[in-house]
Image: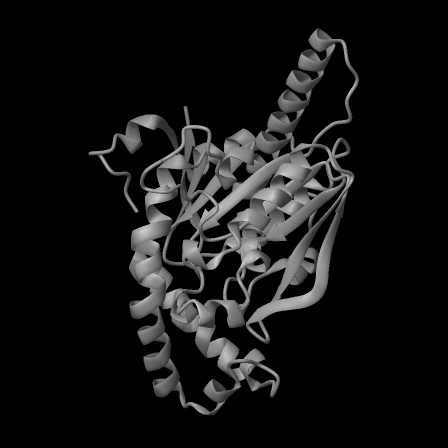
Length: 316
């Protein structure tokens, strides 16, 4: 999607086409092969090795330099204060619509960054785990608003991030199951002294429309670097439909799946259901909550119709 000239978003960013961005890779080595990518790819998106080389190797270099600069600043501050303190993790936020490919990008970046010798411990936390349970959502009349800002346990997410930045050695996050479409009670992701934490989710750059208290903090306040994955809405809608049709033949076929009843639909029926879900839920969330946060990202990846990144915008 084109930057908004009214908000001045375009003037806030340096813009790169694919060739210009590829040149910024410098001598960064490729540490993934096709077998690695097979384990990292999403349901619909099939990321070719060229995409990793052209887009994500340069990005991993930028992030590596940013981690080093952050550590230097941390060391300088502590030297000034005359104290010794353990390093705190560098936190990266990745935002964007349903079906835009955030999860695949997060997995690829995690794999690339973990291969840099200076920060081998890289954890990935999807914010799905911080969704309120289905029982709570239903009790609050929010069953059809899952994924909207009000459907998350924001206090728990903020507490998790605050503990990371406080240098806690062991921090836990809840787990979400896409099979049962709910938070898994008693299950958790344990994060122990990470170098980098990638936090991926729909609304991680979200702030309220008005700030009642100047001292109030938001999820993005804990990020050292933020990425927004952008694409034309028509393309995202098509990707969502394609993913839904793929899941109908795979995950939905599992009798334990929350969406098992969709497995019996033929292709036309499934396409109609997917389009309705997109129109009534996901498109609304994108327009009202997710897309307006794009200008808050440090870096924007603009995808074309084939999922390939065709433009990059880096905040000045």
